[in-house]
Image (cartoon, rainbow, N blue to C red):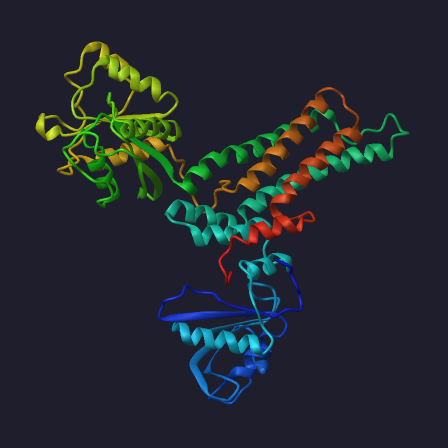
Length: 468
């Protein structure tokens, strides 16, 4: 995308197919071009109207034929989303009407906007920093309450504010060090106490580390926490998947080995997205296709953060130990299905297991359910949510969700660790300043404080929808 500041751009800013549509125009000529197509019953011209005003009228073509009755909203720069003069035409949602209006705008000097170009202009005109601009796309893509809160927090500048505080602190550090260099001929003059600088660097390092570590949570919440349902054949894995998804996603049959490939879909529990995978039943078989399915079962188990180990009867100690070994490092929940046939409660399904088997699963949450009869599924959903161990997130909390941000934070963390080592080892001020500058530069990459390469900007904004 090549940014041309003198271009006036236009695009549909709402989804196609609704009753109403909004066409957005931004640029120096946006109000003039819209004015040329607009007839007001009151006879006034848009060019003479104030910012943040709404006007009813008709959009016409070059022959004067009416296209649609519309409402035009004016935003004069710099008090607009893009920082430029902007007009928004609210019209009926007919594809034909939208097409005609866009054709008229283009014929009068507009250019069709590229994906993300409106938000790119907002960034380049100083209305948003780069992390806030990326939050716009996250907000549009948010699929649950938690990802919505994270996007709102970033859009409101909470992440930028934290990075700004870190940057100011490190600028103070490097200023003190560089002052010493300027007065290096005065050996008794010290602007920065090394022990105080070390404490300040350690505080900064802890903050950067906390932001970096939040990426694991942010990534899981954004993509959905992976949950694998595993167990023997015919214990009810497909039925359980259907119940959790509230949809008949998987084929259910009494025939052993029905599921031969993984079936995956997402659902929400407690405002958090979970990605459930139904897998092939684990058993000894000579069927080549079924063996491939079982191999994929163990692959999905390796990829999962949470494992639902489904049985329909108390397992043996050997079975328990095998599952524990395979699910090492995962959050494992033992689920006993068909408890309606055994007279079990939700919390005592393993009461008949052997003592050695009980020891093997002593620390595992155990839930008894009947997937067929919808018994205790709420108990299981609560256990899944607890196993996810999601921290409480508000609209003021900062959780890193972007790989680009994570990589920049990782590099900044490495740089501040060099500063700490240098302070402990008595490194000279000029070398310390170099590492501090490196840390500052990496943090600045996140918000766009440095000159950002054109390829980076293009990569970020190309993933936006047209109209944003």
